[in-house]
Image (cartoon, rainbow, N blue to C red; front, side, top):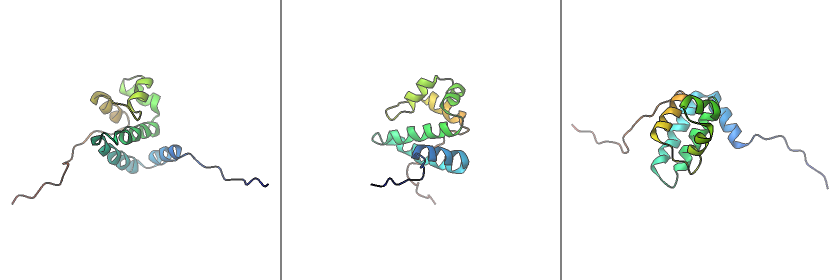
Length: 113
């Protein structure tokens, strides 16, 4: 029985973090798309995990936690699949990675004329 040698692969999360780090525009769009899932309780983890990926890409969780004024452990909990960060924590983390919260209409608004 022969053993096949496979090229080393990069875990999905590591590859995502590397891409987020390399392309700021991608990071913004990635996070914007994922944070839209916060509206859906069944998909809320997607937004939190995306914010965690961005935090890893832009300083690492320990550094981002320090800049956000929370403990690393509290940040891990807040950005876990079952996390429930406060608005203060969410805003502080976004600020620490050089982003801010924005609001858009949920549905296109009709043109009044």
